[in-house]
Image 1 (cartoon, rainbow over the protein chains, first blue to last red):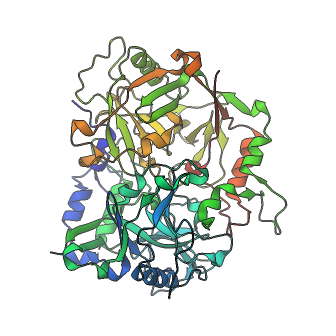
Image 2: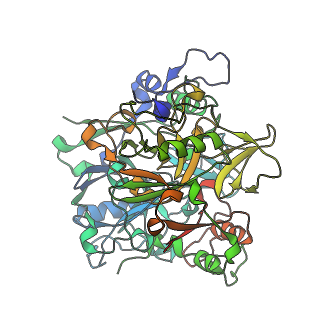
Image 3: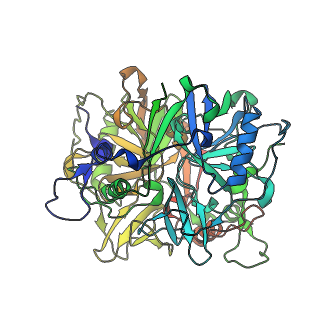
Length: 298
Length: 298
């Protein structure tokens, strides 16, 4: 018989304190099953990118609250067909997958090739933020804004998205303002938080990250594929709102400003099931699950 | 022309302060190239596992200082041929790859099927530890012991290995003492630090982690492959010392108690090259590179 092994990690239950013996506790699945429908938000199809890869579909939720110029530019590029057929050119282990125009010759049409950077932005009370009390190595404060992992610095009044697994950013050259969204990358390894505030993050993979993370690694410098034949074609990229209804996916994300999300956080900090012996009591902003439910629209 | 994009991330240089303008700084490659040979230790072939996969070879360095019983038991299992032909049964995205006996029928012979857990151990001055000043979410203190990422709690006098990318552990059932090394897993995602002190870590992948991390994900619960045909065979597992000299790899790891390693840490905290605009100033214990040089013995 196969040992449950660390497999049990995702079947665990939890209570929000080191009480002993633990009170009957809900599992993460039970917490989500019991959540009211108003704790879930519909992801706006206008804010999604559908990437068709040979192995299946990847869906990205864009983050216009943090990168409005980049998101608008990416929408324009997508609607012109800019990305269709451009390949994955780079897969660097424990780091990123990147898709781009290898020759840099494709026209950006009515879009822009480069934009002013959107590394961080100001915040006020209008911008929601569910702060984590847990200490973070890189930022004074971390938490979640509209379902995205984010950080804040009260001293500067600035906030920014954090480079967690599955986050998507806009590659750039040495100049801060040389990105624009014409080439994009997704994080497929331990969170490279040193990139925070150095690249414009534009969104997060909400479905199909495994299609990117399991691609063959490139063996050139920085994980670039050495031969054009190794590249993986991204067959087509569309804005979700432009996808025919029959092919569209209805995506609902757990709101990060709800009691359900708070319960989920406690569940993951204090795992009190039969498997865990020493609950961590804390959680890293990049270890927090961000549940998304999906079903075909029809 | 392809943008340098975040590719530049690994070509960076650094100086150990926010001095402006930056002094001429060495790149990580330059720091390593300038390192004296005594800053490198030879990885003991008796402490290595060679896994032959269809795609190539993975090499693991075992950690007898932290898990002496498990390491001795794994050596015994390997030398009896226990692991030869056993497959990868599970690949869970952003989590672990696990190889094991799917039927649990294989004899462990003179080895043991289960062992007392080795989740943590005491420390004294004899156990080297290069502490990081950087804050950590999960542990009071983090750093490196003999090239392995580790944590310490001065209040309890205990130390343990940390679940960073590439770390290898011994799967277990619900009981703490139900592991033993008959099934092993490697971390292939964001560090699941909640597993620290809950599973016995036995080593670290020092070569070929990409052969594990790029395997197709399993679509069963917890990433188990649903059909036996999906499993990836681990053709053979050997102790490095038992591999014929012509096939053995001479592995040298940068010592983590050297000025070279200290310089590398500063280089990674304060990236001051042309690409980085906002050096993090801090580093996560699981974001520290642990360089290994390899060449064929002959």
